[in-house]
Image (tube, rainbow, N blue to C red; front, top):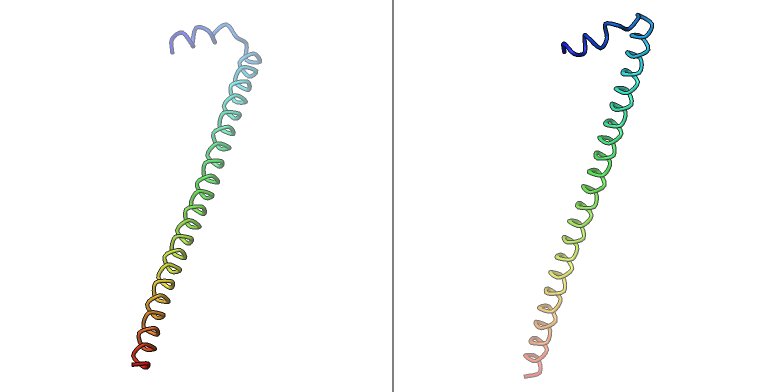
Length: 88
């Protein structure tokens, strides 16, 4: 901090204003960069969440389909057994 005071002391008010404006512009640009990165992360997280939800939905449908196929096989077996019993 002492060094900064020494560096700024020989500057005129106009020069200080120019320096302050330059630092302000750098800070503004960095804040914008960080904000843009945070927005990109939020968007990517939202996309990831939607993808995960889609995968979960597909898995549920697959399980339901497996269960229905299993039930259909059982039903067919029962029908076959009933048919055999009727022929006896």
